[in-house]
Length: 124
Image (cartoon, rainbow, N blue to C red; front, side, top):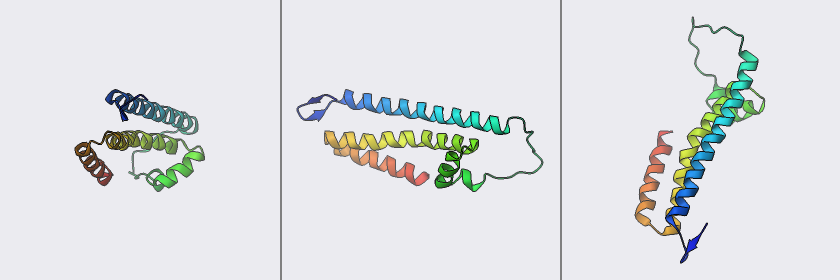
C-alpha cells in the first residue's frame, strides 16, 4: 500500500476492498464446488422423496455444527459452509471499510458504515 502524507490513498483502499470481495466469492465458489462433489458422490444416485416435507437438520443451521460436520466430509455441510463464506464476504468488506475510514479520519463515513454494519448484523 502506498502512503501519501500519512494517509492511505482512496485507490489503495478501493483495490483492497475489490480484492477482498473477489477472493471471498472465489473461496466460496471453491468450497461449494467441493461440497457438491462430496454430496453427489455420496447421494447422487438417490431418488428424492417429495411426499413429506422435512425441514433442514440442525447440523445445517448452526454454524458450529456446520463446521463440525463439514470437517467430517458431509457434502451438504460443506456446501452450507461455502454459503456462510459468501454471506461473510460483504460483511468483511464493511468491516474493512470502517478500518479504511478510521485511517482516513472520515468520521461521517465511519458513523454511516457502523449503522450499515449494525443493520446487517441485526438482520442475521
